[in-house]
Amino acid sequence: MNLDFSEDQKQLKEQARRLFADKSPPSVVRAVLEGKDSYDQALWKNMAELGFLGTAIPEEFGGHGIGHLELCVIAEELGRSLAPVPMSSSIYLAAEFLVRAGSDAQKRKYLPKLASGALIGTFAHAERAGEVTERTIEANVARGALTGAKVPVPDGEIADFAVVSARAGDGGVGLFLVDLTGPGVQREAVRTIDPTRNQASIRFDNAPAEPLGAPAEGWRILTDVLNRAAVLVAFEQIGGADRALEMARDYALERFAFGRQIGSFQGLKHMMADMYVSATLARSNCYWAAWALSTDAAELPEAAATARVSATQAFQHCAKNNIQVHGGMGFTWEYDCHLYYRRSNLLALSLGSQSAWEDKLIDALRRKNAA
Image (cartoon, rainbow, N blue to C red):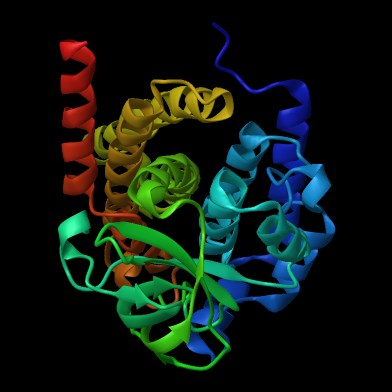
């Protein structure tokens, strides 16, 4: 089995790297971090014009229908540059929910605008700290009106609509489309360790809600889409891990102490070798998960959890040790090390914590062994 990307996909990777290097240098990331904007609108427009947003959206609904392998390639480069855009919430989640569960009318209404960047979507799921399960969902929909609160909601302050998990009439968890600019919706920004990725608290008070998919299938659809999104977020994480490792290597080669490159010191050699091992292991797991995602393989739950756990560990490991290699300079605001440390910690909790994904991996392995 060949788990490498094709030449066309590698060319797409290079195109994405050039775009993000040109349009999303650290100065752009810092402008969002230190400014009032919640994301970089110019970069988002550039990504839409190049067709990045519609990569996995079917052509009949305004996308390019290229595939999820290509979306993985773009996700890696986005993570490498820390691009401050709502890609994960709008494309990995909202668009994927619509593709997997939406009616033709819903797909035609939302997907072309998601692909063009005219609309931003998100997924409102968590309601409090801790793991989200069917039993922890308290938001409910009665007679087409949603009541409850969700926090944190990724890009919730800037999104135009949300896919919301809530209890339906039969008490089960269903999925609903809600216009976040409409009546009955109150939004408030939430401060996190990484302000370059917007988070919000949203309260719904009899907000109009439209069912997405069959109510009885809500949790199954939700689980499936989270597995698919986890693969793409894992690619963002390995992109960030690789860049943090490169930053550490470059600094170790250019910094001298006691007349020697600090990279020649055994302690730093071992530290960076460990960083390389964790990043390489995560990449191999992510490639397996990308195959499972692109083929809708039965192994997707297991592969997604494996990629998610290893990529989370790799990014946090590399981001933390990048600061250590830089020494006292690594802790300063002027150096970019903290930008990767911030993003690594934010992504570690996106779509659920590492421990939650470890539990999912164990459950998937148990089911596999019992079969």
